[in-house]
Amino acid sequence: MTIGTHATEPSAFARELLRWRTARRVSQLELASRAGTTQRYVSFMERGRSLPGREIVIRLAESLELTLRERNALLLAAGYAPAFTESSLDAVALKPVREALDGILEGHLPYPAVVAGPGVNSSRPTRRSTCSRRARRPNCSRPR
Image (cartoon, rainbow, N blue to C red; front, side):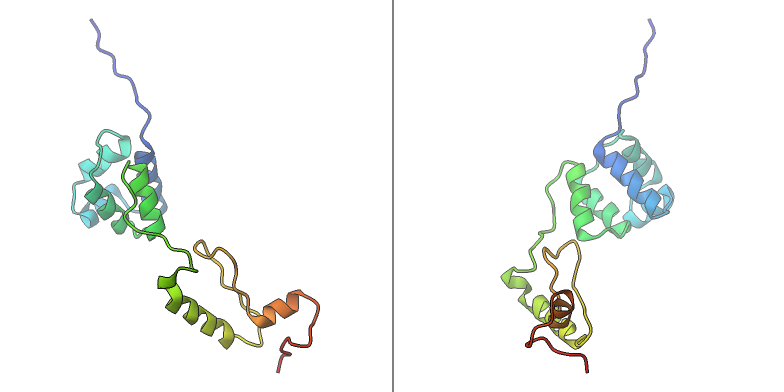
């Protein structure tokens, strides 16, 4: 009787961990050292032979210097709920951030400036950049 081994497809977490480690150009040994685990365990997770706990997933993500959004995605790939909440820029708690961004944009006047990014649902153009994209109106500021 022959016992055969069959290769199983690595999990989404295993593929993502390998992808991020490769993208960051970090060896398994270095990642293990940063995350406080062993190189063997990292290897097992990347091959899908071990299922990591929530804490080690968070430590690996921190060690790879992933953004909070990317850490949440890695947690989801491992089968865990996201650890970090995501808020719209229009949220009440982010009013100081909006005010700071508006101040920066106003500081760019009379030159155009736009705030853009994955957390920004719509760009927040300065009055000057709005004027440059549309026909000139009397209330638009002119460059000094």
